[in-house]
Image (cartoon, rainbow, N blue to C red; front, top):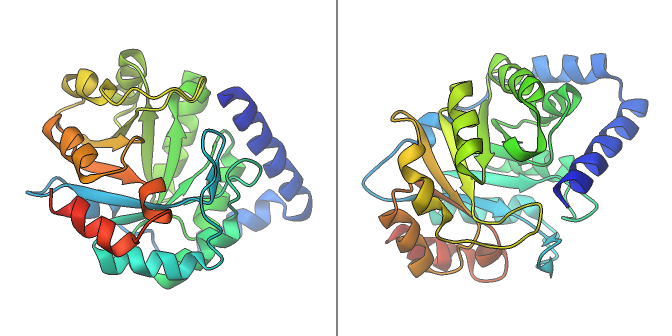
Length: 256
């Protein structure tokens, strides 16, 4: 599944490149104001921090929410106390777009993450051109050479890489990059099975200076408490926010 999602995302990016060449996207990226400091926004605190996600659907759960106005939802997240906004831009399985990212960037003052299956420099330049402050890199989808190339490009453009892992080996690869923001996804993107205890088993492998992000399987305050007690500094939450009251749920999560 992960290989298919990544291949499709790359194919879609190549199609966009036919109408918007790389040099045009690079120029748009360079013309953007400097990216916001996501590490400062997400640095460990006395309370757990939340990256709130705009997510219409997923391969594992199907349709979640129509989200006709992603900017309005992002403003609700900001009002509710989120520290950053994640925007799924993958279209085929998640129903997202770069237009969603641009709308959210214009609506909030928080750091914004482009969450997609990033495997080419073109997609990184697209992210900055659309106003992203962070870009997701999924270790399982990339070999070491491409992972390093994309990581360095994200940093060079002033953004922050969120490096996503799902095993001890992948977490070690993230650490070898010098990643300061590392996530553990409880969902195996090859099989889409969940393991909510995976974060706790890997928590000791994080570099001492890394911000620790728990991803997936966050539906209730109890889930947030579970991750927090395992050492998470940040939780990334999508489904629980788009299918319920975002402000009330964020308040409950932040009270953990």
